[in-house]
Length: 396
Image 1 (cartoon, rainbow, N blue to C red):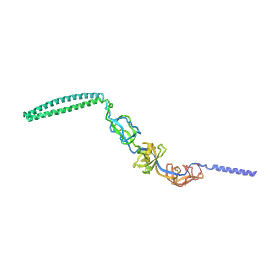
Image 2: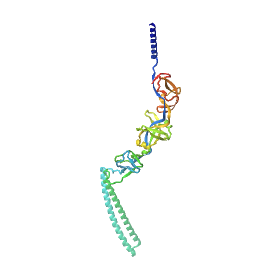
Image 3: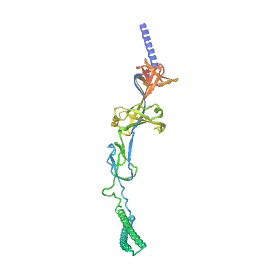
Image 4: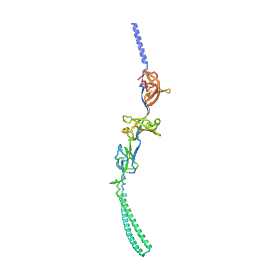
């Protein structure tokens, strides 16, 4: 019995010691781990862009006038040379009371001048008839040599002068008649209203085929010369402008493949870089930082497909493919950290964190290429904290 008691107490003390050691041991550190994988890897530069047209046409009023209602709306097709809107002459301004009274007096004065001109014409014609008769009598006398040649020349001069006076009086009557019509027009067309009946219209035609992109004026009314009425363009010339940071733009080359997404559809549209602009500009970011941006122009590979979904000024997301591979070992970039100028990761082995040196390569978004140091299927820690050390037990 005494031996059994000793054995019992010995076993109890051993169990208590084991429990005490287990209680004093540090608990595993909870971590987030992910598996190293090998798969497609694309290094790209991602940025927002806007669609635009390579060529668009702003159709404006060539002269000041009265614009008739524009029937075309945004999205309507137009052909080359099609009439897109018409202009009428501007209505004559209405006269105030004083100007109206002056116009009436001018009309009366014009009538009086016409009557005076007609009276002068009758007098001139009578004198011309008398001068012609006098010339005929003198001519007969000259044939019989009863008057001198000098006297004959004087009579001919008087006749010619009277005939010239008749012509001048006729012109004066025409001038007085025109002045009367002008004064009557000022008085009659002075209400400020558009004239009734047919009048000269200026038809403005489209310089290109395509669609109406914008209608700046729809309703009739006065318009100034140079004021834009419509914008016309062809969606077959649709392209994308992406303003890249200058440090990213230097890595982009013409002909580079571009994946266009984020436009609202389920598919990814393909494109190619057509041109990297030679000059940049400064843009202030949302954080108030000056950024140097460079415009990059992208052409759609299938512009017909793109034009079926997109228009002008649509927002898209463009990914410029700098490099791509099929079976590339990669890990989240957040798993990498620097130690003494070298890159390292923590690998989970037998429930413990083990530091391992790696050689990272290219980066794409949240992932980084691993050129050496890791194999597919291994577990690496993501966002290792300050509690992670070599050999620390971890739980994931």
